[in-house]
Image (tube, rainbow, N blue to C red; front, side, top):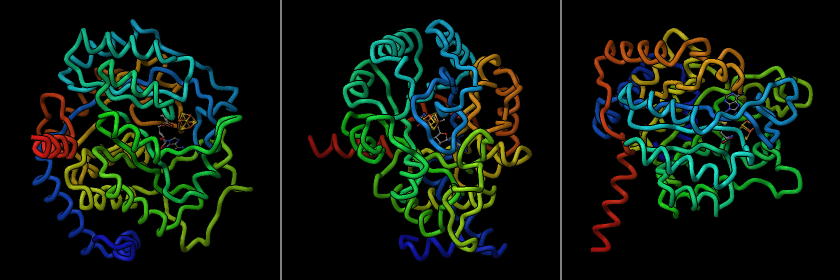
Length: 359
Ligand code: SAM
Ligand code: SF4
């Protein structure tokens, strides 16, 4: 499973019997490595302001029709209390690259959540300065999610341009900084970006392993009509036989292969997978390697405005409806809802190994 050629073979495989064996293998490794518990992370999309112009995302700064919002500290704290009342162990704070949510503001927010709740705090705020990442870690933030989106540097630079006056992004360098700061580190990719080949995707999976990721998030690329990538004219293209489809099946393959290459990582069945496959996306993800779900706690009046792609799953549900639906779906799979913070077994293993070395 370790060579690029083997990964490409799996990504291209369409044989039902062989794929059934891949799902079984991934599910077995998931059970042995991270257990049967499904951990729930309460997601708060607290700001849709963004200074970047990613060619794939509806929050891009050039999308002028989008009404922008930033939740107040009190509104976010209410979501945190709701997470506690639902029994979630983690709050995920996600936003565009919003420098209006400044260093001190985020520091105070993290401190308050950590003081007033037992929640682990995951940040997903895009590319921020190392000093800010250090300040938030010191304030108590536990984890950081930053997808590298694609390991193909040329494709990355086409779809993820630098902020005005800044050098090209170095998300992989930032992931290493996050690790040094002691964060539990998560990354991932979109599956089926225009111009993404099978070979690219195989290299993505190998990079998950090289970065020794604690959390891996993968979802299908979903076109947003107000973005350049949705326009067939001028977008990156490769021969049709090489282009990765942004499908339920391909996303499940990447989840399964990520589980086999990074057995102890926490892997969510993502909202994008549930969006492309509303009836069974989350269930398939959980049966093919995933062990995490991220129910949305964003208040309904903001949720529709966090439109990274259209018709996102759970768009019109309240947090209560989203929670009730997920709980019963997890039980129907014969799995249990995890208690506690649900730290990544990969992170715990690395921390314990390093403590043993120091002793
Ligand atoms: N701004 C932060 C960042 O870019 O890391 C966090 C929020 S951003 C909306 C979270 C993720 O959404 C991105 O890393 C990207 O993978 C995903 N995303 C954005 N546009 C998407 C699209 N059109 N289809 C699928 N996923 C998308
Ligand atoms: Fe902004 Fe993140 Fe969307 Fe890029 S993916 S435009 S950084 S919110």
